[in-house]
Amino acid sequence: MSESIDYRTARIPLSRGAGKIPVLGFGTLIPDAAATISSTEDALAAGFRHFDCAERYGNEREVGEALQSGLAHGRLLREEIFVTTKLWNTNHRPERVQPAFDASLERLKLNYLDLYLIHTPFAFEPGDDLDPRDENGDVLYDRGVTLLDTWKALEALVDGGRCRAIGLSDITLKDLVPIYDAARIKPAVVEVEAHPYLPETELLEYCTKQGIVLLAFAPLGHGMRPGPLEDPVVLAVSARVDRTPAQVLLAWAAQRGTALLTTPRTSARARENFDISVLPQDAFDEINRIQARQRLNPVVQTGVPGFIPQGR
Image 1 (cartoon, rainbow, N blue to C red):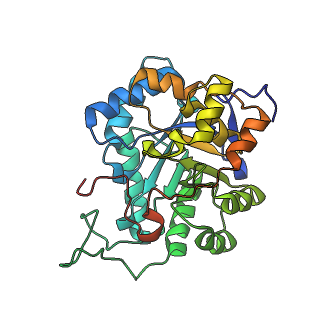
Image 2: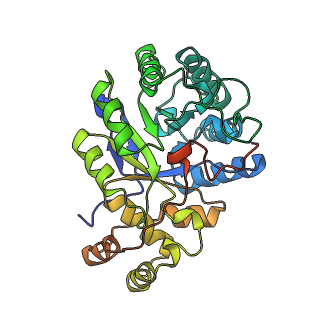
C-alpha cells in the first residue's frame, strides 16, 4: 500500500461510471435531532463529504438542514458531497419505492441522490408503522414481495435520472449473489458491519471481484466494550505508530479497500476520525491476524436493526 495515499480526499469509483464514493464517510444514526444537526455540521467542517442516512433513522430532515447550511454559504458545491440514504423494510413493495425515494429527497432537501440502498433484505408488512408486530411481539413480515421485485423498482429510479447508484445493506453473501446475477443494473455498493472482529473477508473478496464497493459500518465496533477499540493488538499498534486506536481501526478498514462510516459526536472526535493515514504493512498484517469474532448488530438475521432504538 502506497504511503502517498491521502484517505481524507480519496474516493473509490463506482460501477457504471456512477460517481466516486469517498473512502471516509459520516454515519448519521444519531437519536437526538439537535445533535444530528450539530454533529453533521462538525463532520462537514472536519472534511467529511459522504453522509450516510436512512429513512428509518428518523432524522433525514435534520441532516438535510445541516447540509444545506454548508451549501448555502458557498463553502461547498453539491457535486462535492456524496449522500446516501436507504429504503426501509416497510416500503419494499414496488409501488411504494418511488414515493419513499421522493420523500427522502424532500426531507434531505436534495434534487438527486448519489446512492440509494435497500436497508435490509427483509420486507416488513407495508404501512405507516415502521416496526410492525403481532400480539406476541413478533415482526410482521411481508411474504408478498421478493427482494428482486424491490431491486427492479430501484433500477427504475436510476432510469429516472435522480438516483445515480443503487445498492444493498445488511445483506449476506448468500443473499447478494442471486440479486447480482439477476440484476439489470448491478449493485454499486454493499453496506455491512465490518471490523477486525467481523472482517467479512469472503464478502469483500466477492465484492472486489464484481466491482462492488464494500461500505463498512461500525468499523470501531460501535464503541462496544470490550471490543476492537480495546483489543491488545490494536492498542499495541496504536502505541507503536503514535495514532489513536480509532485512527488505527479506520486506517485498517481503508487499507483493505473498503469505504467506511463513523459517527463522531464532537468536533474534536470528527477531526480525529478524519485524520487517517496508511499503516505500516506489518501493523496492517497484525490486525488481519486477530482471531476474535463477534457480530455486534443482528440485523442481517431478522431485519430489525440492533443500533436503532425501537419505537423511533
